[in-house]
Length: 220
Ligand code: CA
Image 1 (spheres, rainbow, N blue to C red):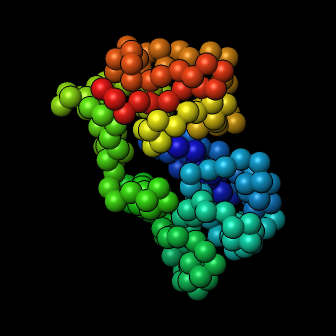
Image 2 (spheres, protein in one colour):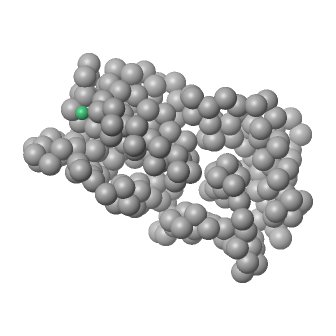
Image 3 (cartoon, rainbow, N blue to C red):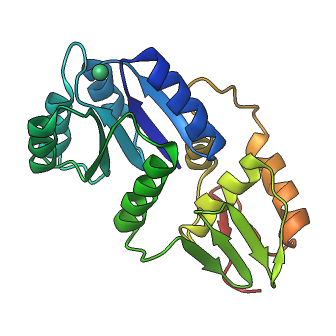
């Protein structure tokens, strides 16, 4: 799950991006509206967290670009308590929801899950494929009724697969959803993670299509 965080306040931006990474999101953080727009032209995201008061181009300007480009990515506005008018304008301009500063991280995450779920057309936080169940709210993976211990990166990779069962994903696409700009990607990082996921979930769960990539199989 890749998140674009647009926030010029360094303290909020730092703590939010750290907390998001702890929640197993891949985060790219930009600090003004112009950078946000440039980034959105090059990279796709699962959700955008957007501050409204920004240097260069403000949050409303970013929203206008998103709307004009007909991007379907959900947008959660992060706004100050006294910005009621801006909040309304933001929602009217295509934002999906907002949180008010100072916010509880738990609420931000819950609202993000709702928006991501809605974008995926899902009613709850459960993903299931065959005998595997993944709870995105509690970050738990259950196989045949037994919890499976995964590292953060293994969990992120499994989520990416389980969101689209039977769909082949290229190595680039998988690297993209697991690693933001800051993170160095070892050339065989994905292969290594798939190897360890197979050890934990069974060899047949994740299939390889030579030259194209991998997919998660529905069959137990
Ligand atoms: Ca701001």
